[in-house]
Amino acid sequence: MDALRKRIVEDLGEADANYLRNVVDKQRKLELLGRGLLAVGIFPPAFVAGVGALALSKIIDNMEIGHNVMHGQYDWMRDEALNSLVFEWDTVCPSENWKHSHNYMHHTYTNIVGKDRDVGYGILRMSEAQKWNLYYLGNPLYAVALATFFQWGVMLHDMEVEKLVTGEKRWADTSEVRKKIVRKSMKQVGKDYVLFPLLSGPFAPITLAGNASANLIRNLWTFSIIFCGHFPDGVATFTEEEAEQESRGQWYLRQLLGSANITGSPLFHVLTGNLSHQIEHHLFPDIPARRYAEMSATVKDACERYGLPYNTGGLSAQLGSVAKKIIKLALPWTGRGDDKTPTAAATPQAA
Image (cartoon, rainbow, N blue to C red; front, side, top):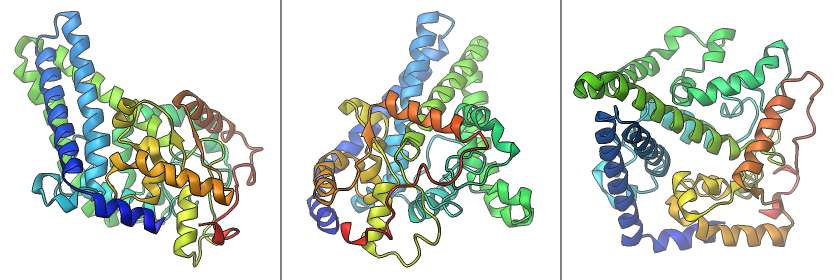
């Protein structure tokens, strides 16, 4: 894995930079098109086309640009507008908070129950290692609510609300996180639900409805792709003890066993931010995501040679598997065992 990473890093260059700049250019044109069409959205075809273009713009901004740029995948370009230190995306979640909860917490402690807060986002039971209680009977309802308002859920993620509820964390401890949330959410709400509707004059309610629809489509899409990356059948979770003192090879193995891919067309991969190659993303989070398809051949070959699972499937199959798990884990008779696959500690030589 280290050799594969080194080979790709040495090959990064103008083609990768041009790719990102081209994606940014297309995303901006889609946003202009979408907002322009929604300004005359009183005509139904213009409204539908406007929502579609704006939703695509938001999906690309969120996934292929925002997520990947904030991972530092393109910092080597030394382009100030596309640097992970300053980039801000088109969602209510402040980039600084997201980089802590995602880049650090999730990517360091991937699928370690109790450490990786992406396992259930603090509100869902997504692993049998999470002790069941009556609250989890609502698992499917919580999942639908999280999918519908996903950008708001991501925004609150770094607050660690579940720890505030249990008293593990004090309200005062969240001061800095809250300040960033207020600033960013006011800016986003002001843009989508005040500024652009007002610019539409008498069509303000139509523009507001169009912007809300585009945000909803983006929320449902990102929830689906992200949950397919870690929660289909066969993806492993780990205990803190299993991940103690793991070697670099064992870290690679945990990322492999804790992630899953989605098959699809080149356009599908772009719209997922190439998180359809979630396995490669977790092995190489700071490598430009457009390279994951190329790298997957070597990863799959290593899995075959060492007898390791390479979890992949179509979107409907992976999403259906996630939905079944959400429903199944709402029930009290599901305990630790079924979702446990070979652990990093058990097979360190394999990585």
